[in-house]
Image (cartoon, rainbow, N blue to C red):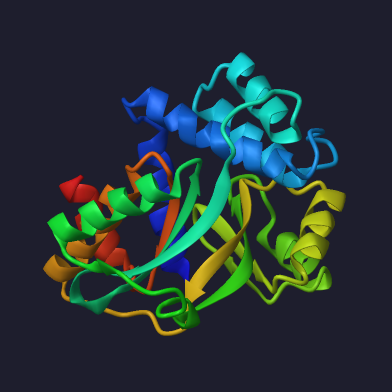
Length: 250
């Protein structure tokens, strides 16, 4: 599972330096608006607080953040956003789940089909791919300044399933039912969380030869560059060697 964090870390670094600021801000604003539906106060809405922090890290102006919150709570009228999870297959049979937030589903699916047509792969019927993934609570914490043993104890006491302590990141995995409990446990222990989300993990990751794997990662890149796409999950096994090759080629 540790490949998930490596890939996510690289994607965050790329997003933070993305020259297409307008597109990045649109994606962040939609994420904020979606989570703000559960409440516009970041002190009580943990997901909103994380979305705001992510937007601030990407230098999104405060006015943009405030407008996105108000759109989510209904104080401002705007585009009606929908969350959609599309399914597909990339090159070499790698299964993909494509998380989308959009105001136009026809546009979103057309854009996704275009990427697959150009780079290899195809959109799949609902249910064709999702069974290969399991949804779990996923937390990342920056290792620096944290006592790994303490984090481990707090997380397990809060009913987390697993904790992986790395040099740069600490990863915590939990069931969907325990997600809120683990979040509250970390907050109560005043342990800073970098990201917290319900993520999708493959039951059987697929290992490919390096060139084939880089081709798949290129498709994931192209999909995540689409304005409506928030995140892409895949069954690709991302090894340390593959990440090093990807970083060298980027």
